[in-house]
Amino acid sequence: VGLLVDRGGFPLEIGCFEGNKAETATMIPIIKQFQVRHGLADLVVVADAGMLSAGNLRELDEANLRFIVGSRMTKAPNDLASHFRWHGDAFSDGQLIDTVTPRTGHKNENNPDLRTEPVWDPAAHPGSWRAVWAY
Image 1: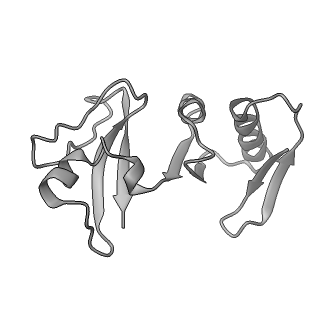
Image 2 (image 1 turned 180 degrees about the horizontal axis):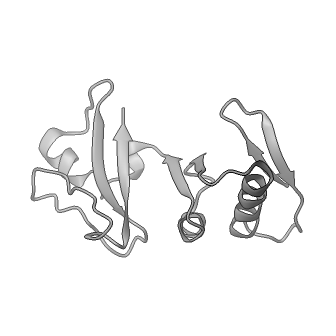
């Protein structure tokens, strides 16, 4: 079952799929079906990191959908390597850290020898996404 809900958890769209279908084969059709039905050109998908795998993120990106993924800071040692090295792992309430995260685990955009975090630019980092970490 594919279920699309609003930010309060209210069901907005539901679809049934064969049991052997991966999320990448069900998530995009549910979202696109909802967009067509309600005439929405722009939509942001929000989910936790457990639901959005690298494959799902790639599929969303290829479908021209924007997304926000929730994850724990401890799961991003490469993205936050500079911050951890220069500032430790303590964060201030409301602190935001803007980083660059690779679309695959095969490369690293962060050089911990530099004190500043890299600034994401789609032209300069075509194989990466912008990551904003908030505490």
